[in-house]
Length: 541
Image (tube, rainbow, N blue to C red):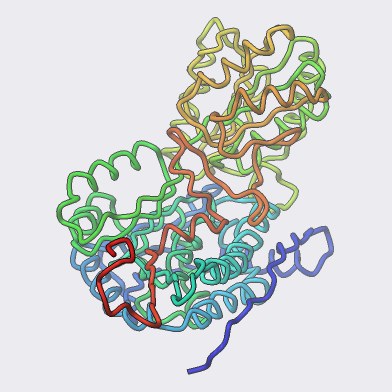
């Protein structure tokens, strides 16, 4: 066995490619997109060294062209899930005992493969099946995932290198053991990078993983599994088993070796799972680690000193990039009356200038929402607003699902600070604005803090440093990621560790050392070089 203390390459955030007209990366990406769009996939379960096709299959279609089938994927039944757990546990000993730098090397290789030959493939898959435009796919599926893999490698070395002090005659050591059992990863549709990281982060620390991807993200999940396998990830370390929640939950949460949950999804589902784990706590070998990032009702608040153009741009980008389907997307805004007319003029102009359509046309800023159920939910909020006397739609408000699940970016202005669309999570291209008297700054900050049960992201716009300080303090518990003079989206790995509290999750900060620490169980070792030979202490004389 090799001996040494190893330093991994210093991580640097992956540069976002421009994909401008005529660029080679644009040509390669769009060619890959068209090839994938014109072919059909049959996605298996990945269990141990087997790729399993089942009789229970679900269709895959593009949200922006739902009549065009991209293929199908297999659904796992109870027996498949039991087999996945058995394979994971069989792989665990070898994987957890593998020297840490070899585990790191696998995921660093995956990062380099992703930056090179897999870049167009993963971006095209995300564009096609999750309806992201070129830029949104690039910053998510390529750049953020590369960053997760490279920065996590650096965090591992930091975790292992930090050791306790030792006194004379003794040597104190700290080791970080993988959890005793398997980790269950439940991942969302909206970020390909998050899906991969929810599996990769525990695996990097020596754990084995059962992975349930969202049905609307299975297409890019297949690419992730191919990437990890090519990078050299051993069979059984990550097992991908799409399944219905009740079927997989019945097996997972009743298994004695369930050791942890890595979750991104709805607050309601997370709470239900937490209850189930609590009710089953006597069945487990250890207390499971429960890590979850859930919903948001993210805000923008502007001070009377704010620049109207900057505020408007923060709303246009923060609310409508990726159709507002980001946990961090701005969903409510509080604008002072003294700048409102200027803000209003620009945001209406911005929205009216948005092009909407298929990701196949890179000039489209807005694409489709993810599914018919999402479409129906979001449009019901818009319909509700249309019928109310205390709200007005100033731009947008139309929707159509005849070809794809297209909803116009919609801005609602209300005179009711507790209006339904300003207080409930929508998860779509809808933002509600409340115009307040510019003299009611403190009162409005308190309103922002108390309106929502969520506490994920938020932003303040101001040129007054005293006002910024007050907002930062007043909104201390209202957002786990707080932005000053910027939109509340776009957290970068290594720069803004991401997560919120209250009903937005456990705030374990994906993309930081804090998250990785959740997937290990430390053990302290004390070695005494010359042990005592007499029980008597000096005070006994």
